[in-house]
Image (cartoon, rainbow, N blue to C red; front, side):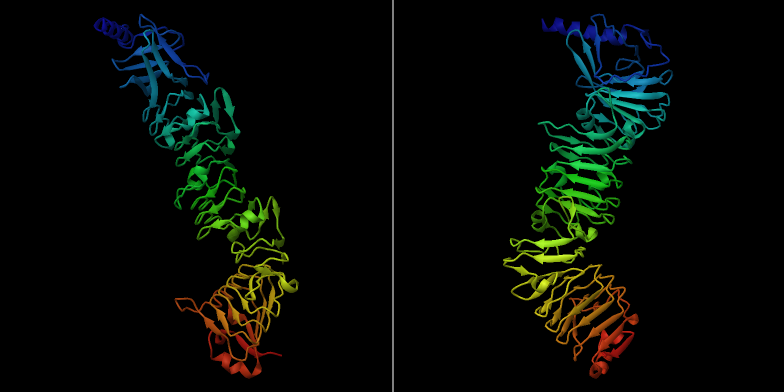
Length: 531
């Protein structure tokens, strides 16, 4: 019984490949010189009848394992699979409608799973291609040189995203102007399928397609391959609700810039995202805005390194920002924005709630506040005497100021980074109560022109007045020149980047000689008596 069945099956299979002889054509339903221009948008199933005939399609046998169907060359591989490995160079023209399945009357099925490397290379007459859902691999340079290719059609977004491409020239979207999914053209906004099944967007999937302006990545996308959207020059907005994609740890070279390209202006993260990974937006040089939901609790090291044009990062609430776990390096976007946005609104008048116990996420980023007020009954901080600053109550240390700060005469210390990068600060008076000025406390205050330091300041830490490029007058009322406390390398950078040769140092008349022989005070362009 089994022997008879296999003999019949072998006979039926051979009928397809041998009945008509080499290059013999039968069921000639289309003109050989034009394969047509219509894209199917559906999986094409070709049926072989009991006599080995294929109805409705043009068939040419090459040898026992190779044949053409409608001008596309197929290779019969192992495990009942078919590969596309060429085209009819003598006559191909128009649309390449690749079949999905070759099905026999006896139930035997061959699926097309691969388009081999160089399969359509330099096919100058191809104007469109339809790729079935059965294809999972397209080899390197499969469509290289197909300069007339204008349209590419896929059965579904899911099947498109599941294809693994060998390189950029294996994806027809690199050349085409139009993408069709199930017969519908995809332009502008692309929303990827949201379903219960997780899936990965492979490398080069949308590489070079210029028809997209925005893309939405759903929660069930668990990974995005290299260059998946690279070269999509009109793509400016990405919405990401996949925690797997957003929270992944990347290197400086393989984060979002590699996936989506450097031209993206806006990243919007959805409520399913709980963390932003290391180097996520590294060197996204055109990025201008990021939206971060309340669900995000941490942002990894250097997540925004190199994002020099970043101007708006919108946090869902002040509490979510102030409690954010920022990693090392360039993870806090305030490094670049110098502005704090909460729920779509820029905060110019900052109010610190009584529940806040740590303000590290605000310190030293030069946020351009007009005023700062700490709510009454905050156990950790206060803004006494309407000073427009945050003062640590127990130690009387000013930990963060703004351009309108007036330092109270009860403050003992100016903390490290307290005014760093406060570009709106033009002058500051440090009262007699202060004894110490911390590291980089006024660094980068580019508008600062006048500084007055009280008589009880005994030490100024490294970098305190570095990069104050417009400083003109510096008054120090201390009889004994304050000591400079350097960092571990013991290099004096108190005024690094500040041209103190052009700054006038004002000191008590009795102390002029002492200042003239002690660095860094001796480096000032002129030292005169306080009037």
